[in-house]
Image (cartoon, rainbow, N blue to C red; front, side):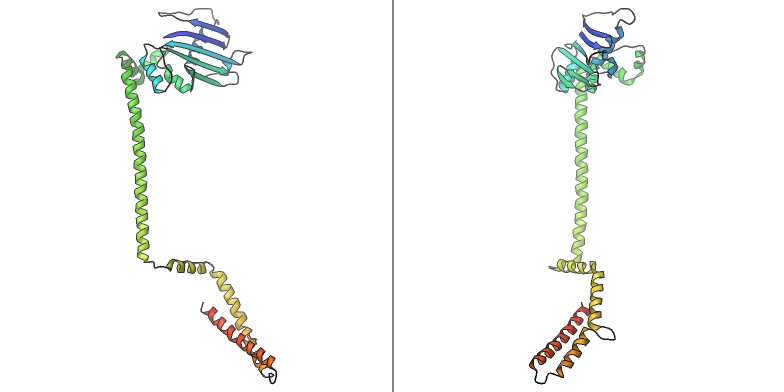
Length: 287
């Protein structure tokens, strides 16, 4: 039951403080006196969408405080417990709205989201409007009326909690099954790869050999270009290459070595160079 409604700086209302008692209460007044604003204030306190145009001109902030007696509302108490909010027989909702568009909501002094406030409001107030009778056609509303008539509030909340726990557990189970399937697929892939490696019958040191061959193949263009260039210099064309020149030089020097030990050494070195160049060409050709 709504006990008190305090409104500050809402539209044309500077300050209104209503204390309500049990029974039927009627609010009367001339047109424009602010009757609808009182309902707007209550709706804001219950989580309705806020509009900066509702902040009283010349002020920075509007505030609505609604105090309820929930001693006979077990569903509201259950909601507070479920959301880990302080509870007593009295419940205080506070909503603030700034001229800059910022809105904040509190339940018993604890900040909450407007969506939470709307959930809680369903346990506190039943608003009847001009077209409220159309709700009677909604299945959700019909079930709510049936639960309320049968006093199933606590049982319904317990079921909702159990169902929510089941959904979370089912989601966790599905996640574990997905992880298990991924693990099975990965294990199968690894087993296939191991079988493939076993068919290769790799020997010790073979990996290094294959790696070396791969490096050689990867640099094939460079290898071919350099070896062809080197062989061309060694073998030469019709005018001869390094090998031919070394052989001719060794032969020429040998003709004038008579009595000259230094020239003989030079001839020997040229002859050795010719042999070394020939061996180098052979190694390159068979590399």
